[in-house]
Length: 225
Ligand SMILES: Nc1nc2c(ncn2[C@@H]2O[C@H](COP(=O)(O)OP(=O)(O)OP(=O)(O)O)[C@@H](O)[C@H]2O)c(=O)[nH]1
Ligand SMILES: [Mg+2]
Image (tube, rainbow, N blue to C red; front, side):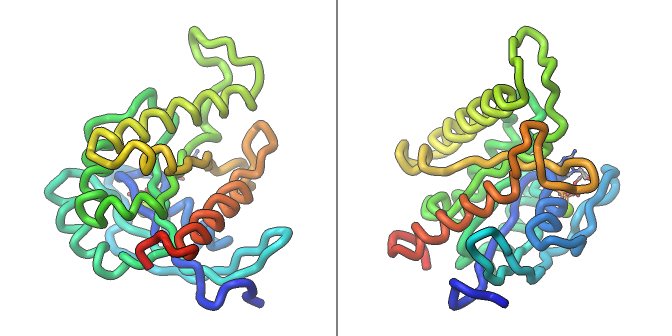
């Protein structure tokens, strides 16, 4: 039974090639609907839409999640974004995925951020959430770091990537405060796709809270809808 929202929550999932978008879509929908690819020769090739239902302790509502092909070279990004933008401009939330096991953002990450901004406009960042994927693959034994608990490791990594991504937003011309307002959430498939990290935090519940807050703040009248 879908409650609390007159219309389904529309979530658009974007990000670079292999950043874990299709796996995230499956987690959001609660079943395997999108194929994930483990080899470089594969990859999602079409924009696909899936329906699901969110059930948290306090809420239950319908949602539509859109999986997209990976953004890669700037020329292909242009084509793909021309296809995505008109159809999904009115999404309630845009999840932008980054593999957080990497040590830093790359020029390609900045290209993705710039092209999303050019395509959707800076307003898009009011409804965006950075999703820091592959968190379950982080290691507690990082060289030169004295991180004595999973909790510390996740906080450290999240702060590091949030800083990188906020700087990248400012670098492509998004306003200082608008950039700082974009939240970031950890995500990562655990064993048998159970959405817990080693710290026992339930990343999917945390992400629902962020998405819900994001949608509410837009519906409050400051957004694009
Ligand atoms: N450990 C771990 N593996 C992940 C995670 N997300 C995705 N993977 C794995 O990474 C590979 C690529 O994941 P996909 O979900 O297909 O990535 P994608 O962004 O949809 O890829 P494209 O459609 O090619 O752009 C698959 O083998 C997944 O099983 C994650 O959070 N943690
Ligand atoms: Mg995919």
